[in-house]
Image (tube, rainbow, N blue to C red; front, side, top):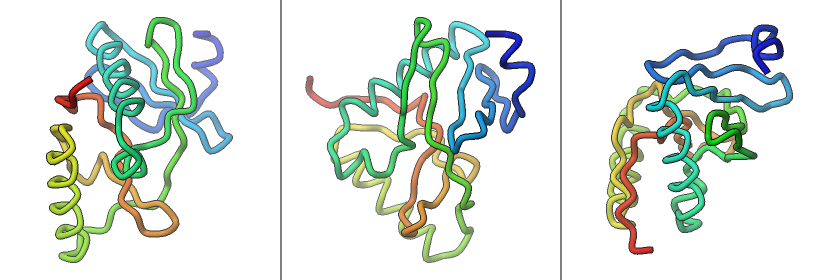
Length: 134
């Protein structure tokens, strides 16, 4: 696995994870520590438990494994615009998440992209709190 990772292009580095481009409109998030594993696991939990009105705003998880050390997601390229219009949309989206029992921490433009239809998508939600009733 380490040999494969060395050949991939790094597109993001965080405190606990490295994001690499798989080249097939997918990215892989590789945990660097226990906290990275925890972030990957939290993303899987939030994604699996989210209702469809929320899930459409979360980066699509394609697969995960190795004890949550790796997480493969769809790649989104359209950057989040810093316009008033999209700031208002983001504020409304935050409320939608809260009403559905998901506390969205770290909703900054680095963690946001747009789908082709203009819908806001969150690409890093590893530190969201899921307070939905199981």
